[in-house]
Length: 270
Figure (cartoon, rainbow, N blue to C red):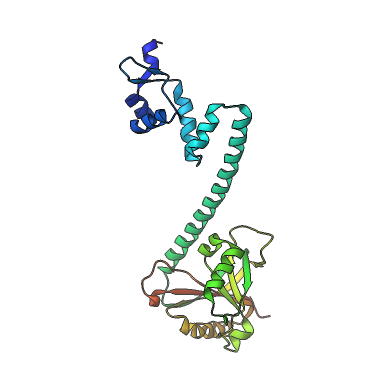
């Protein structure tokens, strides 16, 4: 290979690596990354073999290492130092991957919910086959009006990612039948992943009677009565708790468009 072919000008090197040449000038000025050769005319010339080193610097910078940290490493690089950095960054990447997987799951579920809402009538009851799923539960009677403290407690107990999944409420069937809607039993959220330090419950697989109410929460007791009547007319037993959750928040501009899903497990009477 021709010797002159081994060297690149600042513009050529910058173009190859997709950076601004001013970035290369800055890195040279601060002693982070300098060209192997400078001509008599003051021009900088980079050895093509420097490309790998430069890409590692870019990678470390993308992984949130500061320029000062990278400089300190490059002053006297060793195998042990690199192994330590690589291990630390791999752990950080694993955490970021897990977080992004949660975000993707939240977006996917919300997209499905919103698409489903587009097909609903204003008030509708359906029998739906549901898979088993883990839910986190938090007893709360709604008589305490300090919502700021409640939000902080939910975030500290479940995590902000779980709040983004959606928070619903659950209420005993005895309260539903007796029309005692002022005192719910608690809050719930569908678990993104199992956590042993959080109170959870496996909502069983099976058929659920699902009511979809469009509009104000004040009219939810009407939908509950429709569900009870539907179960009676079709010879179903209602079991467990009634679960409420909003499906289309963040995509509506009017509360009258808000859709609440109520689901109660059913069994056929013998």
